[in-house]
Image (cartoon, rainbow, N blue to C red; front, side):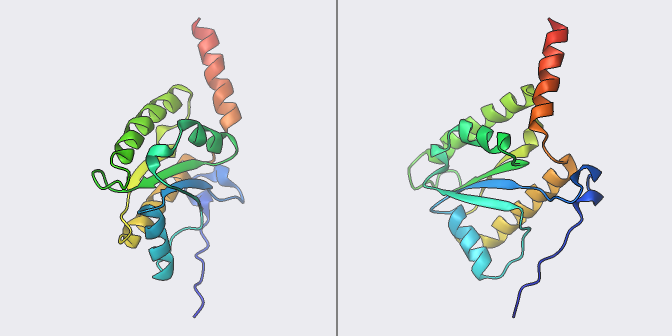
Length: 165
């Protein structure tokens, strides 16, 4: 039995999408959220084909520059998913990720990029349904925000700074 892909017109959320669809880069913890993604796939749980997942050993190892690079290279959003707090296979990696992502979201806001474009979520290996819900919610959020025009966002911020000085 073949799985049919749902065709979504993202222009209903924001007309700036044109013919393209959101691109979300996902940094997924090897031990929990990557396995939740695998469970979602083997369980045939449907979710949008907007996520480009990258397996990392721990969310605590994600340098904020990786997220900035993903956005700069064309991603419309970044989803970081790992083990639930207190259940990290490397003791405190997810707590480190929480601190880093909070700072990164504030930095992005100062640069004129909506902080909801970067999200941190948790899913254990047995939570394929939670994984699919999170990807769907992230896709809906990014669809409403519209495509990220990194270059113009940065130029607007620089222009505002120049006027205020």
